[in-house]
Image 1 (cartoon, rainbow over the protein chains, first blue to last red):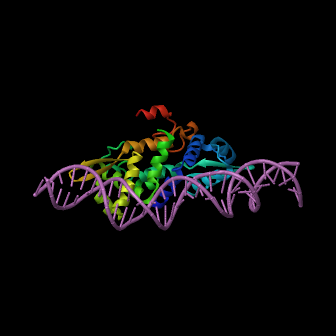
Image 2: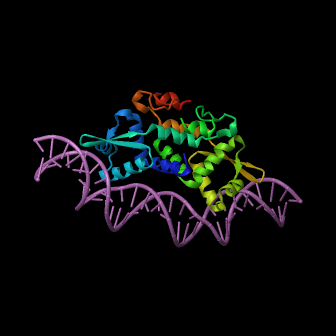
Image 3: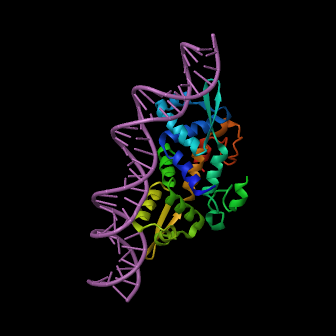
Length: 114
Length: 114
DNA sequence: ATGTCATTTCCATTTTTTTCGAAATGAGGA
DNA sequence: TCCTCATTTCGAAAAAAATGGAAATGACAT
């Protein structure tokens, strides 16, 4: 993962409505949610929601798929995992004492292909 | 972790210089780095760097400590881990198929006390 | 083909964030 | 005490992001 992509992903999550939206999708799992349902749950106008969904999609954190008349949105778990790995890359100066068990101390290369 | 705190942390990381800075500290480990060294490594004016350090500190992602004439900055690994846990809270609708081994499927309560 | 419903685009406005030079602060060391 | 060096605050200007109503799009069903 490159720095630009990481900034895009973090910017996408760094907003009240988008963070709530992303967590909604993370919790919804494979089933996902339609734009309409999301707008209602968040209490945000459609035009605003559409703007926020586009940001998350541009950052690669959310995937969409048409289903009948609605469009279903899902969290992209692998993008999320890549972001976390990027943040913790080569952490703790190799001492593995930061508590990030899954990523700490692992060289970047090994993780990026996973 | 509350939503506001998570937005603050994500906003703090969602900026080119601050993300580079945080990763620098993550990789530096316990030894940390002085403000002066960071400014030089990032090629950012002191006043700008100070602004960015304050943002990261306000978000709880970075800790400071005076050492002789300089001030040493360190990444706050536990804040980072809490943020990741928040993002993945109750994920995948309980199916544990999103690859977030350490947090997926675990109820929020169990993790927050860890 | 036409109607209908879900979602997106457009636009102007408002709010928030970033920038950095110059001056101020603050903690040692001599 | 007084000097020096590291860092922070101030301030004002520039850049970027969020908002929401109204109009446009696009796909499905009849």
